[in-house]
Image (cartoon, rainbow, N blue to C red):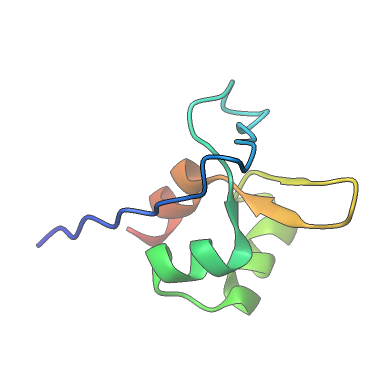
Length: 75
């Protein structure tokens, strides 16, 4: 069984594309990533540290997650 999750964002918020996927997907906040993957933020940070999930950090320290690589790891 597959589940589709739609994340709606404010149109005023800038979309940041994954630098490693060449812009294949807009990056998600950690909270959004937890919702779509059904794994904890701690598990997501572990995947980041292991190099399994693409991410970027904003200048103000916000971690953004690539949904493409995240969902590939949890499926």
